Length: 142
Image (tube, rainbow, N blue to C red; front, side, top):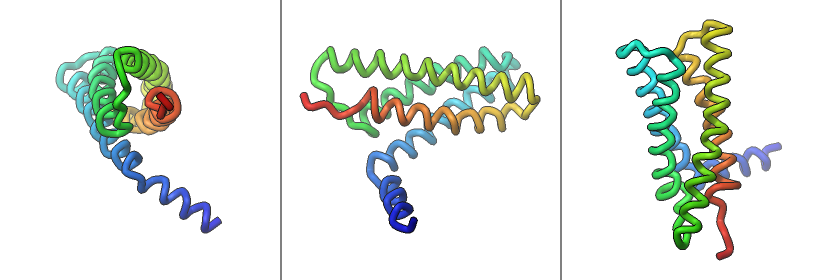
């Protein structure tokens, strides 16, 4: 058990994981701030606010994940297009998770909107890391 915990702890201390956590926090802040500005200040409904927050945070995440987290230096246009299409495709999947979670927490359970956004973001971050690490920015032999 102790060895397994040490291995897990070492996995979280890699340069890649620390960068993912840092930029994930930044991306989450972009998402939450945009959502809060739209709902609290502009009085937009939660769904429209959530979609705008998603668009801006996904753009931020793509750039930081590609350049700083997974340091993808993919050769050529084909690799760039693969990463772009799969990244945004995966994020559309996580947008579905995000929208469903927000609907559940806000409309059905009547949880505070900020708390709902934070809770849903935790789930989305895990889904996004798995897809980014093992599908989108995976190391290739070419």
